[in-house]
Length: 256
Length: 256
DNA sequence: AATCTATGTTCCGAATAATGGAACGAAGAT
DNA sequence: ATCTTCGTTCCATTATTCGGAACATAGATT
Image: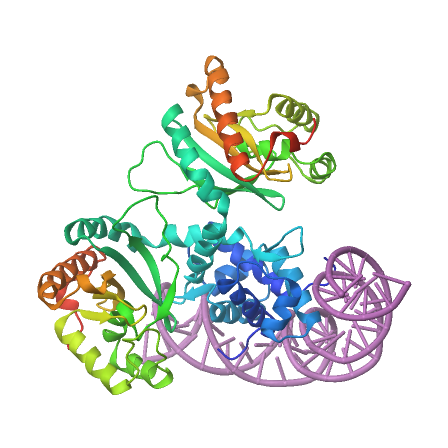
């Protein structure tokens, strides 16, 4: 990763602004990004031409409909979603909690599929959301990463608190990860969002590498200790079922 | 649109390749794009860093999970989807055909929401798909565009056949558009896909501009003439309901 | 009505970053 | 053991991006 197109990468900074802001004017972006106005202006023209940004009548920009197209393509091509969905629904019906499918993307985790408990209209608010690998249900992926990769991540990452329960001590986190590997699941309480708990298990691909995480999540008070044995068994079992459909065989599991 | 970041816009050519190809190697892209290998290589590095492309173990690239995030953001922020969905479901239950919500994006149309007849698992294959404005159900948007804009489009666009019924004669298309405006709906048969028909009506925003299109679509043989009066009334009525919820008032309608 | 202010757009010389042919390296295939 | 094929690095050339400054336009303020 030596040769880069600086301009290209910089334009990402502009697009990132739209994760937290639904609409922005040129000047907004100049202020938020700190780049010179001319440069921002030039990039906007290009991003608009690419269809990544759309300009409204009032001069405000927002994310373009192209993302709908690409987003749909990505979703369609993620085989694991199709494989996991029925199993996730079954698990949801069984335990009565929301079920999430999480994948690693770079140094972060991303929620790739979700089935909710109250199914009003579908409002998959959590799909596409990112979270750090060290906190919450996504930690299960970190736990089962190859030693070297995991250690590198721990070295390079600062543990910023997200909720009251976020683990900010690296050694404590290491111990928890170790325990998660032994148990085959991990539990988190108020790590990403207060009063919310989650229990997660790893999903492996045919090569025996962690490929994703499966979690049940809900209000803290529904995840008391007495329920954990039952929950953990069911989540682990569902995760294993998905793993198997992805071609994993128990024997290919990475030894602890 | 004078000053552009050439590199940025060119990188879009690479991303576009992934609309038709789920995975590509560097060399594949060199061949398909016709750009020099070094340039493609550099852009790939940047697109990967941006999260728009992901590199697999075997050196193949595919669209990155970032698109899932941005796609979801766009979908969530499109208020019309939330407004339209219940009305679309009602219409689907009433007429027993798939219902589509279509928006204009640049010189194309894009399917923004869909409710299907056979609801197995959801498989929103059509969401995010693009089609030309001159053919199929999306033509209803073209029909209600301001005269000047519509004429400019017609001047600049070549009518390429997509199905047996695609209209390739501009004057014939003009007449159909005129009729659609008078009728308040349009019908298309085998224009985008053979043996598939659709009936579409316009959705207007608070300013009285076409904002989207609503269509029912299905196999040709279920859209015979005797059914059109009933269908057209129902689709137009549903579209008007959505328009009204978007702040449109019948009085603000653009005069024919 | 006149002035200010905020925001978007254009200009242009200087500085930098992108370019792309060529050579290299590493696998896989023959 | 020798070919291919594909990804990666090198580097001098040149086109592109850069960004301050000036301009344009529209709303707000006096």
